[in-house]
Length: 119
Image (cartoon, rainbow, N blue to C red; front, side):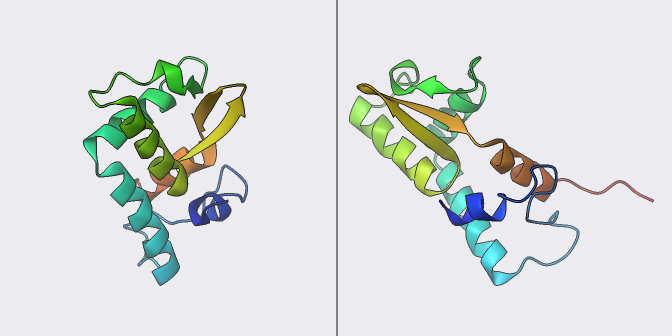
């Protein structure tokens, strides 16, 4: 389990990290967040993440998400990097690997980038 997944393993409604405008991040929070943003900083990875996140079945077979302008081995490499960053989880079924975005990860990302409403 990645650090990001560990940090958001708490109740899904309350992800780990505060909004960036709420308080300064701790060193550990900043390191985990930087890994996540670094993984998403590549346009191919961002497209792959988007394809998995928006897939109608909430998961996508690697065979369904290969059309991003790079070769299949490169797609596999980028999916591996997204998984290592804690953004995707995978499950092998026969010869295919299925990827999905952990809902806790999306909640953590959303909360991190949310600006609190004025009081």
